[in-house]
View 1 (cartoon, rainbow, N blue to C red):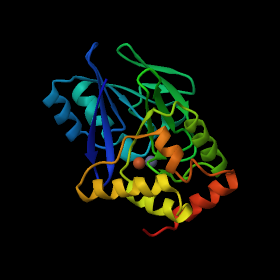
View 2 (cartoon, rainbow, N blue to C red):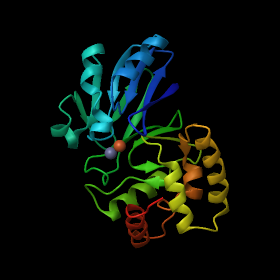
View 3 (cartoon, rainbow, N blue to C red):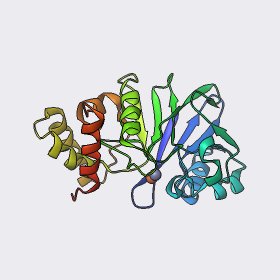
View 4 (tube, rainbow, N blue to C red):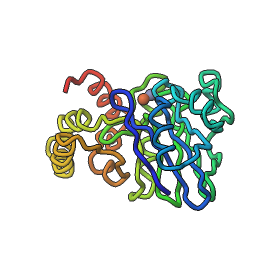
Length: 241
Ligand code: ZN
Ligand code: FE
C-alpha cells in the first residue's frame, strides 16, 4: 500500500492511499480537491473512494469536487450523515471498508465530533485517526466529554505498538511544547522534541507517528485518569506556545 501526504490549508494533511495489486485508490479527509486531483493524475491513479473521519469542512471540503471529477464513492460516519451530504455509505463501529484486497475496520472515537471514526487496517499496521490522536496531542472536545476522549486514547494505545498513525494536522511542535510542561523530565519526549524541532526547521513533516511513540511521549494518551486527562486537555486549550 502506498500512502502519499498532501499538505493543504494551513496545517492539514490529506492522505492519498493506493493499493497497487487492485489499482484502487482512496483519499482520506480531503480538505480541498485540487491538489489531490493533481497528485492522483500525476501518478496515474484513479480515485475510486473518499474516506471521511468526521464532518468538519477541513476534512470534507474536497468531497464534492473530487466526486464530481472522479465519481468517487464516499464512506463517512453514519452518525454525521446530516452534515456530510456527499456521503454514499454511513459506517459504524466494526464495519469493514475495503480497498482492493485490504480491509479497514471502523473504530468509533467520539469526542472531537460526536460521530468521529478512525479507519484501522490491521494487516497493513496503519490507522487513519483524523483529529482524534495527534503526534503528542489529541483533538479538542467540541462535541464530547473528557471521559470519551480518554477512553478513545486508551483504546488506540492498545493497538500493536508498531501501528503507523496518520493524523490530519501538523500540530506536533506546539503539542510537544505543551507536553514538556506536563512531563519535563520525560527522556523520550525530550529526545523526540529535538528531532521534531530539527524536522520543522527544515520544513519536514512529522507525521505519521506510531502507537509506540505516542505511548512514550503523548501526555493525553499517558494521562493516568480521566481527571488528569481533563486537566491536561483544558491546559492545552489555553496554552500559548
Ligand atoms: Zn476536526
Ligand atoms: Fe481538522
